[in-house]
Image 1: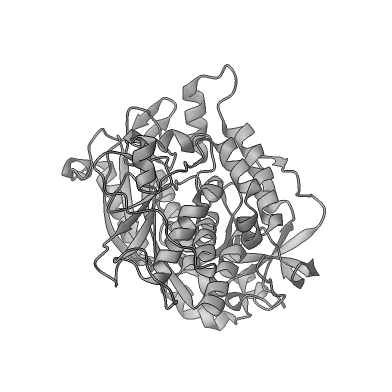
Image 2: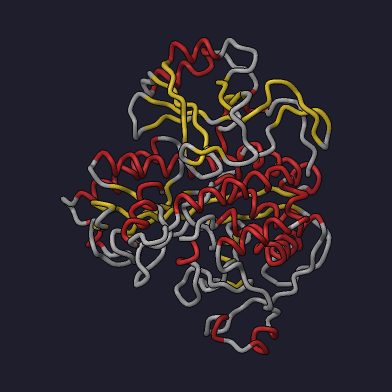
Amino acid sequence: MFPVSAIESPGSLRRSFEDFAPAFHTHNIRYIRIQWVDLLNQVRCRTVPLSYFRKLLESERPGVTMTKAALGLVVLQVAPGFSAVGEDIYVIDFSSFRPCSYAPGHGVFFGFFQEQMPVPRPGGLSIEVPYCPRALVSRLVRYPAEQLGIKFLIGFEIEFTLVKSANPLVPVNDHQWSTTLAISSGTVEAQVLEEIADAIQADGIELQMYHSEGAPGQYEVVTGPMSPLEAADALVHTRETIYNIASKHNLRATFAPRLALDSCGTGAHMHISVSGERPGISASKYLTPVESAFLAGLMHHLPSVIALTLPLTASYARMADGIWSGGTWVCWGIENRETPVRLTKPSSPSSRNFEIRPIDGTSNPYLAVAGVLACGIIGVRDNLPLVLKNYDAPRTVAQLTSTEREAFGITNRLPLNISEARRYLGAANAIKDILGVEFVEHFLQVNQMLGRVIDRRDGEAETEAVARLVENY
């Protein structure tokens, strides 16, 4: 695992209340949400009045203490590897503040889980909790910047479905992709979308566009590029905005991967650009050497992190061949939506990026970002050659013969279910070396317990399982 320092993360250094007073005054902040996302991708928070937040800032490590089981609670069960004994400190990252336009008078900070006292780790004494999702991303960003000279920008396409009820499942409408009928004036969905758009922008997140998608009641919000940790924070905030504004209008927003097999799935496509100077030769005229090595890392290691990006049994109903979700074969293509990695805007170095398609809204944003970064970092660090060719044939990869696939260097498939994805992750020594063995072990324990709770049960009607998925995601 990359070295973990006992020094506090820069964003969590102490600040005075006066540093935030102007922003609090501008947004009429009365309450602060100290927020985190656990290994289940449940957003949790402690809400404190501004008067008590002022007192927190006077402490040596401003934050709140909570049980060591906080990241491993599955409903009311504690996952193996977590304990009700002891407490961590969730230390506030003061660089993460945003107003919550979806909840007037509230503001939000994220933070880092830390030990109360330094404990022995492979890299020496540390206060970092090795399975803290935000700390994991923060660490992964520092290493390539300092050791490899590369940086990343990340943006997201955030798909969701608006429903009137979960059981029976009643979408808010039955309109089509990018149709104006889906935002007809006077409809509740048009009002919800506009309020979401206003709130996202008011809270300092770049909104590039929104539009209807192909499934009943389905929409997409596209946000602009940010550094990886900022992008994950912004994705959490955008999802909270969508949830809350839909709720305000007596609707439910869901990021469930696929609500009906006869319609489109719901994804969370990540767009990532890689910049930096590295020696070497690119395998494509459209890629720099560092981009080529990053893509090679994705092609080699992406199957090992799919459990982080597609964490539920339901996730694999969306990941199929021939439905524009990226397919099931490890490959890449220029502007090809039937490949798991799409190179977009190839002739424009300033905006060229990789779209990672096998990600959905049930995944923890920090873990999805960490998984993708880990794959690419290995590629750059080890200067991996890009063996797979740009897949530009008109048919899907699944329609090719094995000989035809091999001509493009395509030989491997992604995991086809969550059990297979867990096995890939558990056996991926190179990925565990970067993410940390302790993190991987804790995630797998939580994910297995989550599956037992959220998956369809013996004798249960499918409508009940879908309703549970919609109510939780």
